[in-house]
Length: 97
Image 1 (cartoon, rainbow, N blue to C red):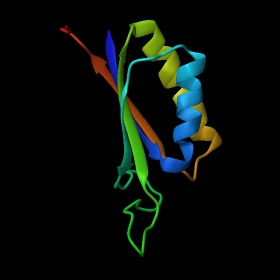
Image 2 (cartoon, rainbow, N blue to C red):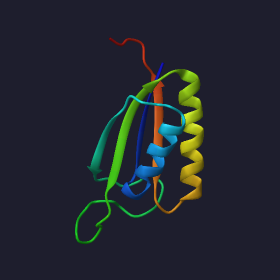
Image 3 (cartoon, helix red, strand yellow):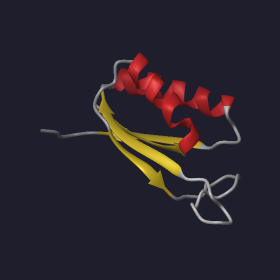
Image 4 (tube, one colour):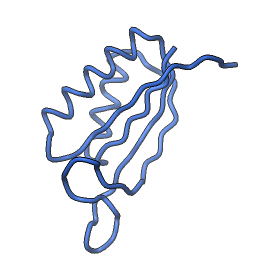
Protein backbone atom coordinates (compact mmCIF):
# COMPACT_ATOMS: atom_id res chain seq x y z
CA UNK A 1 0.00 0.00 0.00
CA UNK A 2 1.06 3.57 -0.69
CA UNK A 3 -0.05 6.90 0.72
CA UNK A 4 -0.16 9.58 -1.96
CA UNK A 5 -0.18 13.24 -0.91
CA UNK A 6 -0.98 15.79 -3.60
CA UNK A 7 -1.10 19.59 -3.43
CA UNK A 8 -2.13 21.82 -6.34
CA UNK A 9 -3.56 25.16 -7.34
CA UNK A 10 -7.28 25.17 -6.47
CA UNK A 11 -8.10 25.55 -10.15
CA UNK A 12 -6.81 22.01 -10.77
CA UNK A 13 -8.68 20.23 -7.95
CA UNK A 14 -11.64 19.19 -10.12
CA UNK A 15 -9.28 17.65 -12.68
CA UNK A 16 -7.61 15.65 -9.88
CA UNK A 17 -11.04 14.48 -8.72
CA UNK A 18 -11.84 13.45 -12.30
CA UNK A 19 -8.69 11.29 -12.36
CA UNK A 20 -9.61 9.71 -9.04
CA UNK A 21 -13.16 8.99 -10.21
CA UNK A 22 -11.89 7.54 -13.49
CA UNK A 23 -9.52 5.26 -11.55
CA UNK A 24 -12.26 4.38 -9.02
CA UNK A 25 -10.16 5.72 -6.13
CA UNK A 26 -12.72 6.43 -3.43
CA UNK A 27 -10.96 6.98 -0.13
CA UNK A 28 -9.24 10.30 0.48
CA UNK A 29 -9.02 13.21 2.87
CA UNK A 30 -8.88 16.66 1.31
CA UNK A 31 -8.11 20.22 2.30
CA UNK A 32 -9.79 22.90 0.16
CA UNK A 33 -7.81 25.99 1.17
CA UNK A 34 -4.07 25.89 1.84
CA UNK A 35 -1.28 28.36 1.34
CA UNK A 36 2.07 27.46 -0.14
CA UNK A 37 4.99 28.23 -2.37
CA UNK A 38 6.59 25.76 -4.75
CA UNK A 39 10.17 24.63 -4.33
CA UNK A 40 11.14 25.19 -7.99
CA UNK A 41 9.54 28.30 -9.40
CA UNK A 42 6.17 29.92 -9.81
CA UNK A 43 4.25 32.38 -7.73
CA UNK A 44 3.28 31.87 -4.09
CA UNK A 45 -0.32 30.90 -3.35
CA UNK A 46 -0.94 32.76 -0.10
CA UNK A 47 -4.56 33.90 -0.29
CA UNK A 48 -3.69 37.54 0.42
CA UNK A 49 -3.95 40.77 -1.57
CA UNK A 50 -0.49 40.36 -3.11
CA UNK A 51 -0.75 36.61 -3.85
CA UNK A 52 -4.50 35.83 -3.94
CA UNK A 53 -4.48 32.27 -5.28
CA UNK A 54 -4.81 29.29 -2.94
CA UNK A 55 -3.92 25.61 -3.03
CA UNK A 56 -5.90 22.47 -2.29
CA UNK A 57 -4.52 19.12 -1.19
CA UNK A 58 -5.49 15.53 -0.56
CA UNK A 59 -4.08 12.31 0.79
CA UNK A 60 -5.20 8.85 -0.27
CA UNK A 61 -4.02 5.34 0.57
CA UNK A 62 -4.15 2.84 -2.29
CA UNK A 63 -2.60 -0.29 -3.74
CA UNK A 64 0.92 0.13 -5.15
CA UNK A 65 -0.12 -0.31 -8.79
CA UNK A 66 -2.90 2.28 -8.41
CA UNK A 67 -0.42 4.71 -6.81
CA UNK A 68 1.95 4.30 -9.75
CA UNK A 69 -0.83 5.04 -12.24
CA UNK A 70 -2.21 7.92 -10.16
CA UNK A 71 1.22 9.58 -9.96
CA UNK A 72 1.67 9.10 -13.71
CA UNK A 73 -1.64 10.83 -14.42
CA UNK A 74 -0.92 13.62 -11.95
CA UNK A 75 2.45 14.21 -13.61
CA UNK A 76 0.74 14.53 -16.99
CA UNK A 77 -1.84 16.92 -15.54
CA UNK A 78 0.98 19.05 -14.10
CA UNK A 79 2.85 19.06 -17.42
CA UNK A 80 -0.33 20.06 -19.27
CA UNK A 81 -0.86 22.96 -16.81
CA UNK A 82 2.71 23.95 -16.00
CA UNK A 83 1.87 27.45 -14.74
CA UNK A 84 -0.67 26.25 -12.17
CA UNK A 85 1.47 24.10 -9.85
CA UNK A 86 0.94 20.52 -8.73
CA UNK A 87 3.17 18.31 -6.58
CA UNK A 88 2.59 14.75 -5.42
CA UNK A 89 4.52 12.40 -3.17
CA UNK A 90 4.08 8.76 -2.21
CA UNK A 91 5.40 6.65 0.62
CA UNK A 92 4.85 3.10 1.86
CA UNK A 93 2.11 2.35 4.36
CA UNK A 94 3.15 -0.44 6.70
CA UNK A 95 0.09 -0.61 8.96
CA UNK A 96 -3.56 0.34 8.77
CA UNK A 97 -6.82 -0.47 10.52
